[in-house]
Image (cartoon, rainbow, N blue to C red):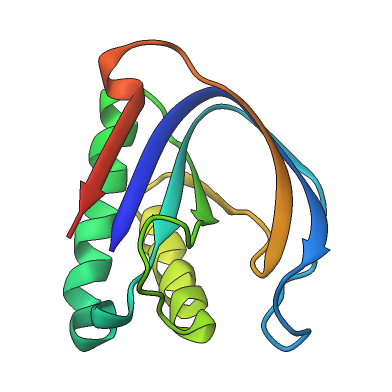
Length: 137
């Protein structure tokens, strides 16, 4: 797994083009958030072998980065551009749903960008050291 975490003062998206079939793609609508941690998450094929451990590491990293940036708002965004290896879309979506539930249960406000779409993104991020973090596990 690869995850790029960016603390954003403002994060907006507009769905542009459906990339996956109707059976895998979410309903698409625009979204806007303030003072949120955006997780650009790339699930790799090898993650399937140890998905529970990967899930736990992802949750811990997102919670840590959110605390360091003093936010309770986390956005999960599927971003399959951080590695050549890609997990199957259904595995990624299932992982996102489980991570969302765990974060909600921990008291965070959690949103997912529409899964299976190319999105126009607008973000504004402050220039401090913990506003941009990358993890690979």
